[in-house]
Length: 537
Image 1 (cartoon, one colour):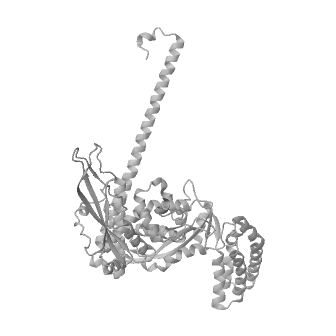
Image 2 (cartoon, rainbow, N blue to C red):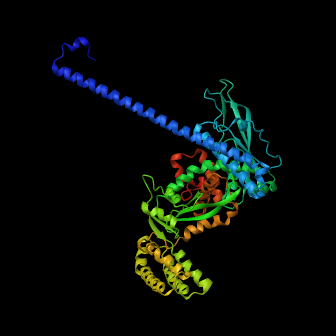
Image 3 (cartoon, rainbow, N blue to C red):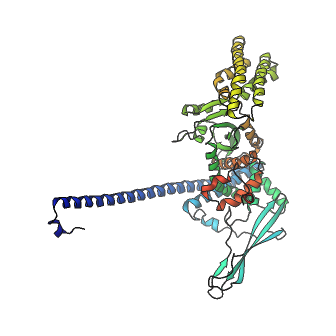
């Protein structure tokens, strides 16, 4: 530091060096101030984003509670069947539980639970007639840090309800309290983290409820009756709360599954309609479950379901992140639905399903005995017969054989279709079948040039089929939350199924491990990577 007296004695070079040092010091302080300002601005942006999220969730909670109040009125229920009323009520209870959990995580505390929730009646003890398994938890060491042996002074007892098909049992947890007589230090084994904090259900019971609802198509009101016959009456509103809370806790795993899916260059896509109940008008309208999955050639077996109110191609673009900085640009195998065309303009390569083209001619032959339909089926039979032998081969070999064999058959089929189109009267069903193939020919034959692309979309249709069987249960509340929650959980249980796992065993293990599992290693719990915990030791 140069004093004012020293300034008079400095020569020009010393003065220059002093000024350079001062400028450097000021520049460093300016940089620190800019960093601090950026940090403050970033904190303000994060706080504003969090507050906007809390406001949005709080508003959604208010709407859901008004809907729940309306759903319990006689006037509202007069336009609905008993099953619709039950499904609506359980959906609303699940939505409220999920939103409550999201508000708690956003605020970092329990502000999501209002006063009325806190004043709910005390939980009743679990029935005494249920079998009990006592599980004792004691500290690893009962020797105090001062060297004294601690004495047991009491215990805390809690109970959790477990379920195996047809049989309820109770886990009776005993946590001994140990105290040092010398320094009064208290030691007790910690409470194990649980997917539902302070809840009574074990991970096994929660997995049972989720698998029964989203894989076996059993609505909660039916599960309520099944549980009652097994000796434990659990209100469907309670079951719905469990489903909602589990949906919120499992969402990060579903997000990781979606991210994993989008790392692959060839995907299937398909959609199927489901009925959606809107509380406002008491009527159902068509919503859609969109399905995306890896191909049967891919060693990674994964399927992700996405729920949407419409059949618009924007749903596909949004899922593929085509408006983001890193859009997906692989090959999408689909049926001939025009909604998928919205993805092509964004760099996606279209591959259409040859089985759908074949189906048009099969309908002609089966319904009208069409000779044109019969001849077309022979061409398609040759293409699929070639393909049946290529499954186990590597992509390059598959492509080589396709170019040598399948391309010839496809070329003959294309010439034959052009010839038949000139001979068939316009406006007929035959013309429609022919035009369906001719208009999509480049996409229908895309698989010949790419060994990773399958000939048909049958693989994803097989993943959707179990959903179509359970359409009677697809009645949702007006918000998309319940539909998206169902799609998310189905993504996990069906991905577990196609990887050869027991969905119940998978979900039970995941629900047990998730509360303590590092977020950075969430991919370890994905169905295609999952190993039971006992197998990892």
